[in-house]
Image 1 (tube, rainbow, N blue to C red):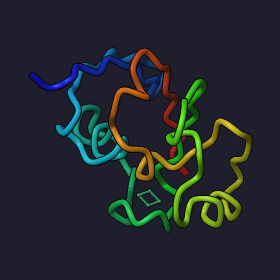
Image 2: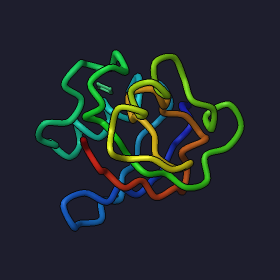
Image 3: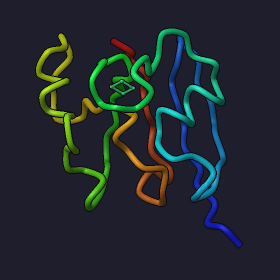
Length: 107
Ligand code: FES
């Protein structure tokens, strides 16, 4: 039985409680785009280059907390910064997201 993952996403002034399981989505960008039908979110398809999938997450643990691949360069070009600012496309959907609150910022 796949591991159930529950998280809360804040988008467009609304709070969305989402349940998924490990393996259903490749990354957090895919999950948010699929479940919330976000507009102009994830334009590069998850390459870590466009900076349109920015989210704010507090409490990421272990390896999920480290910036991946192009993430620091892309975030450096954006107006958003801070230790909890991340690219959703670089965050795998696994147990490290359980019970966290994720705020969609976009670009
Ligand atoms: S989808 Fe383009 S940076 Fe994440």
